[in-house]
Length: 305
Image 1 (cartoon, rainbow, N blue to C red):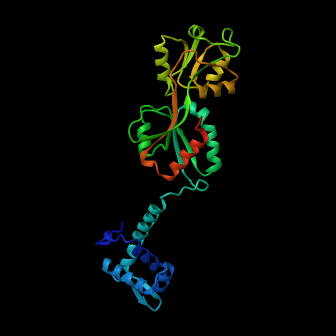
Image 2 (tube, helix red, strand yellow):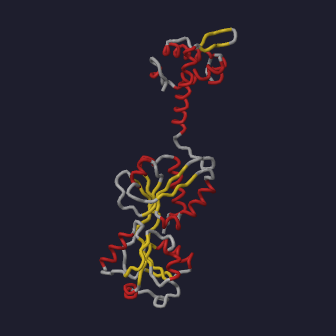
Image 3 (cartoon, rainbow, N blue to C red):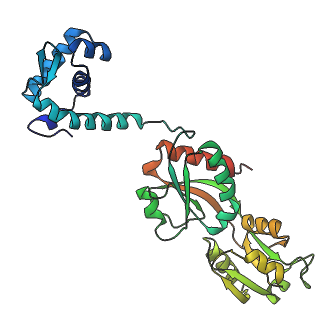
């Protein structure tokens, strides 16, 4: 805001505009023309400014209206206020992806780095070539990051998010198993008996892991774990070169099976499925860039079946 005496009370946008233009033009007539005012109206507004600021502001000379020292002192703060007001009024509903230099930040699992991120990045580069995308993990800080705006979106199965978080369903997930296509005991069929008897690799990361563990416990299935991994990195190569089984959500399981030439089977143990959704905080529901990003994610990944 403007400083000194009563200047902080001066909030009339039109008076500030006149002060700004008059300082450049040094002419009430030219300022009135530029602001599309009548000259009498511009003179009345100038009188209001002089009364508000208790200073002549501009003194008439043969060379035009010359600013007083006080006017010269105030023009910088005045223009800062005008720029802030312009940004405030321009915020409303405009986001031009073609020119936006926006940094988007999305919280997602490492499985989504494989299944969602490549397509999302390609579309973002095509539609918003000057934007930047940061992918970060989902953890105990995700809810706070959405509330503060540190993250624009979180994509995944996130049942623990509290009030203030909105969501939109993208797709359903069930569970599948991966196996080496040359597995000596699992080639054409994987049943519950064989599942119990085989060795497994387990992934500890992922928001659906608790559902899997709970479902197996309910059916009294205790996997014989040979390898535990913190994420899916390297999982395809491990399944391809061993006789281990891996149980994964369908989306990442199907992707790994396709890219690594693996056998893909429905999980023979009935495990509760879950919904993958995009999540955002209500504070940013109407923010134009956030709205645009959500619409992009919906178009790319939401299944309507």
